[in-house]
Image 1: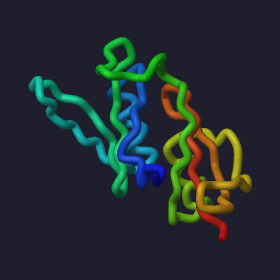
Image 2: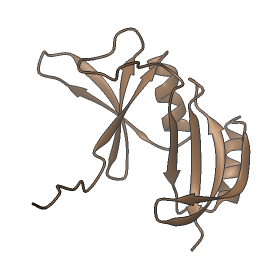
Image 3: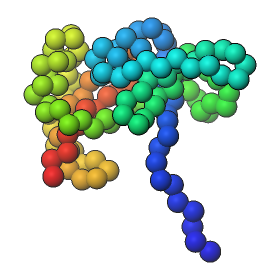
Length: 134
C-alpha cells in the first residue's frame, strides 16, 4: 500500500498577546495583508496573507477550538523567503525601527542554501527573512 503524502502548508496559527500590535507589525514591517474573515457563528477572526499563504491569528486566552496543546505568544520560529535583496530589507527594517538580531548569515532552507536576517515580532517570535543563494 502506498504511503499518503502531503503537498503544501495551507495555513498556520500564531497565538498573539495584542491583535492590533501584531497586525501592525506584520503589515507595516513584513508587507503582509490583514484579512479579517467571518466564521460560521458570525464572529470575525483575523488572518495575515502573503503570496498564496495565510497566518491565522488567535488572541491569547481566547484561542479558538480546536487549538494547539499549549498555545502561547512567542512560541514560534518562522522563516519567510523573499526575492528582495537583504540589503534592501536591512534598510527597510532600520526605517521601521525593527532591530536585526542576527545576520545576514548563511543557513540551510527546505530547498537549499539561504542567506538570513533574524528579527522578533511583538510577541518575541523569531522571524527569519531569507533569500535563496543557489
